[in-house]
Image (tube, rainbow, N blue to C red; front, side, top):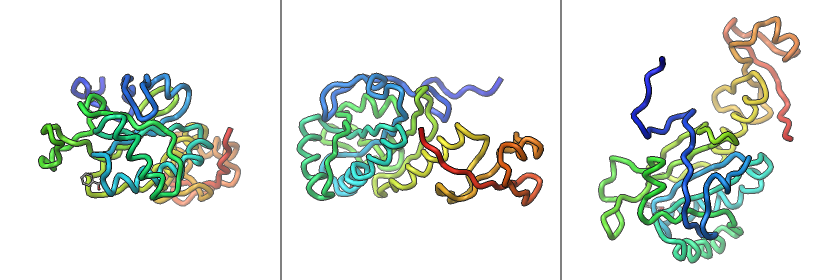
Length: 226
Ligand code: BEZ
């Protein structure tokens, strides 16, 4: 049997824990919000901070692309809902956008601790009550509530929304086809035939596949969305 992680540790393949919380849009139950969609859950250290402000504006601008992929966004920051609502006005003004997805209000770090959105390296990164601020975590969660991606960035470094979208595309394409995606892949570029597919099967599944090495076979693949 595979080694089991310590109880509560979230890894790829873990079930995303449910939670109830106040948000900028009122109270939510996370599973009810997610429904049958994919979800991007991403945390921020603090409201009215420079990097976070740029990030939320960028996610809001890109939301239509996530929607096309059957994916909902939900942010989190370590402040209350009223603070979030005031901050969203600045985000919209600065990024010329209209942020409508919820931002979880997590002043007590209930959700941040559940999802381990805390680090070891920046002990000074605390609020006025001494509670450690959250880092920049990203979780991609699929419609079965399985965690499919975890990325942690330090507070100092803003994320790359295009990368989050790229990984989502790779995961969704890999769920529908027996493929993997190579380094720096973007939609439209050749993908890799999954090692479990024999050359015989590949002739039917991917008529244009090419063998570069016996273990490395590329094929074009059209990205189709439902
Ligand atoms: C920021 O979003 O700019 C930020 C937040 C907390 C610590 C450092 C930077």
